[in-house]
Length: 406
Image (tube, helix red, strand yellow):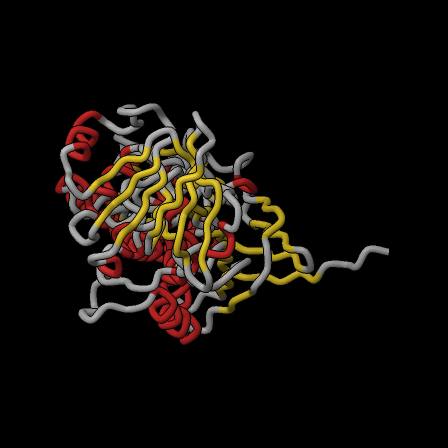
């Protein structure tokens, strides 16, 4: 018989333990939410494979990616966030209770934060796996440029990222070779980048080539290219090979539930909200302009804070808004008209000796509660009867109108 799965309940389940996921975990943990981070590989994600990080604020002497991510994890654990090293098999994200399935356990949560990141597209050439990340193959010029000062490097690719990152590398490297699979002079990048690259004396283009194999001992030493026209093997001795042939977001298990971009990245708003209530997304898995540790941290902070607000507002909605027959005044404290109408309803409460009573909901910082009530105009009065919102008033707040609901 199949083994019965264990069931665990959390306030927040975060899928992915990179910089974004751990930052979200810190915010949730500090808010005293029962929080779990699920990471199938190495906590810290791709950043752990970066030898030197010099552009993350607060570390003037720089840091290794592994060292920085270890600090992230220490801080996350300080707030009693749990880590689980396993793979997520499936998710059910609709509804108030979210389901996250792993091989042995079913996790139930009020909120799910997607922070699953992505993975660079690789060439699949011979021996490539032996040199990935900190052994000679890199996917981030910004991260590893300084470490290649006065060295020879090779770039695979000819799109905007490849050529622009190659130009950046020429500020540090001695020589930047570029393997391009197209005919002489043809690139996939924009014309301005192409023109600048062709005029750069440090850049040397090797046309009609793809990677055949990688060679080295404990570190990459040589990349053997193959000429697509002649079959000739071209060995290039280098210190680092940078691959810029695309990036694959880890969104396969979300594609039937979460709105994704054409490239497969998660689409979010400025609060890191997805198309499903109670599901947020942060970091490199999102459709975004810049993928760096610093931007992942920013995303994670927003997602963690938004998750805490969502849980608090959900509890407030069910325990305070819907539990009795009353009126809810929904307003924006920064609005002068809202302030004036607030004084009017407070006077009405006094005038009727509390017969007409109001709860007050200020949407200045968050519209979470107003969205749940279906209120989009401010000020408004929501009429609550028998656990339901039966009407929303946007203009007539008179005593006669309100007493008609009593």
